[in-house]
Length: 490
Image (cartoon, rainbow, N blue to C red; front, side, top):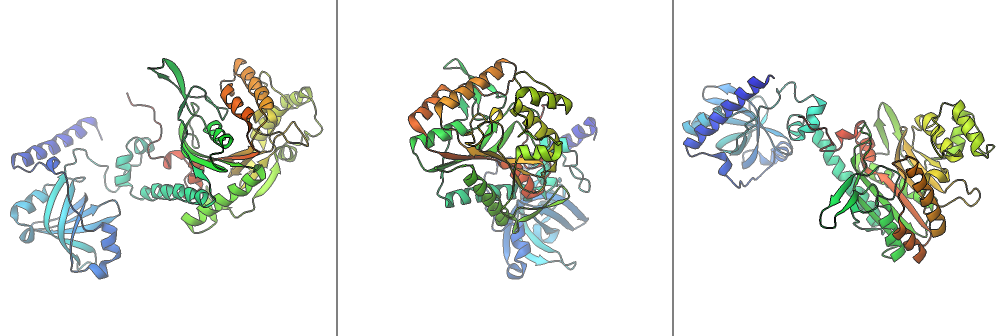
């Protein structure tokens, strides 16, 4: 719709508002309105409610009729019901004002519940009250709001004209509630840790930087809450702690990445990565059964079965299967880099055998992980916070969980050796100085915490947004975040 037309339509609505004000009927002065029923309640319980009086409030979404009779579709937060308006019942003044209403206006309606001759559940209006005047024109009824960019920018309009998306966000709320139910039932303690810190730790990612004026220091928005949660394990707050919250990573945006996202991390004392695998498949199965009533989901044209136990495979074995290279027989960085060049891997500064394994896995193996799978034993070079495997110190006791070729969880037996941890942080600092802006920072206080003594601990991080995508069948992360990050319009 052209800007001139939009402005003209808005001016017409402003003129109507001024006309109402001159009659002493300014809708924006009304502060409260008591309702008795919601639309879905009337629809679902019509047999019990027929003939009774009701009071509802909602938005006018369509109007039709002529003369002394009008029909109006009204929506509230739960659904839709029809209002039947008759001049003889409302009175001339009130009926004439209602006829002048615009699509999008919000009304309070008092009346009687009945069914029309056409069989539609309706409210016979006896009194109507304008509660808010809509000054903007909603998208055309039969076309709705289809432009994806505009839907995300104006989610409030999207929710009005595409009411089916409400189900996705209501299910999102149920999923997060079910996650809490599971971990509370497992005797984990929910905690809160800082969003702002002087060190961005707990993951390899580029942080957002902000500035604290009073202290006159730069601070980072958290990329993970891992290091704080492990401090709580050191302190003995509880055997198990978890936190669900927003993380912030200054990185690319695509169908599965948003700079601000919801993640959950869980830590359990005296547990290892095998316990975390068991915990992961159990919580996912619990939540899916709770919100969907089944352990099978349809996603991206595929049926995925979340029933435990899930498949488990070493990263090196996947590389051997799909790339044809056995890294159990490649024992030097030089040999590994030669393989990397042969397979088209970009050679980066300080690249080692472990980095090559990971690059080949990401290039050639991830796409095959459709059914739920735990990929285990990542190279130590890409796992700065995970405990080394006793049999092969080049790898760690770590796993990532995949569904439909996308990572949904990351976990490991936590490194609790402060000497080893310092050395790995130093290696990460060297990578950062070599140009890797996602490498981990040095965190001396965390090392100090490890020196106080952390028990053997299993840690787990689950991408809550990714999990919600799978459980709601949405292929874009923007469709499960109410207000995704958007570039401003000039």
